[in-house]
Length: 150
Image 1 (tube, rainbow, N blue to C red):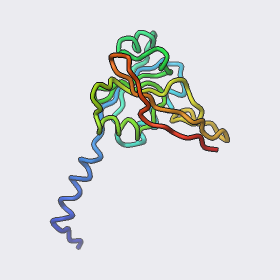
Image 2 (cartoon, rainbow, N blue to C red):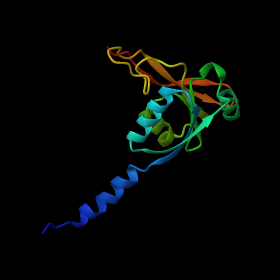
Image 3 (cartoon, one colour):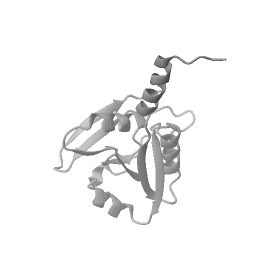
Image 4 (cartoon, rainbow, N blue to C red):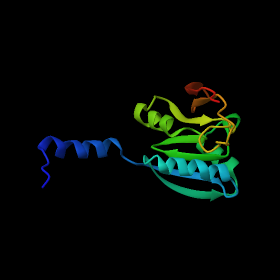
């Protein structure tokens, strides 16, 4: 027989609470394969419960959520009250949720950098890219940097 101590019994619920899954809703064009790859990464992280909607007019979605057009990418998500635009790594989304910086509407990875989550290409490494935080008043700042890798 295995014995479980009181301290072990208390650690398991705490660990589960720290690994809570956040509800994420992703909107994308049905024909986008890299969007599906990014969605798969979010699901495999174990930290997000992901629902998906195929959209006809992604420009309208971005406008509705206040995403600056020059930060646009191929897919848009919402999680914990924030907008997530493009190939943002899951760890940066979790950092945003945990830190909840004042005035920030969301974060974005503009364009489609090679090697960013969902944009991996065999033998291509990763381009350097930045995750940009944006606010409703138009201000922006670098939220995270990801260096190039070969």
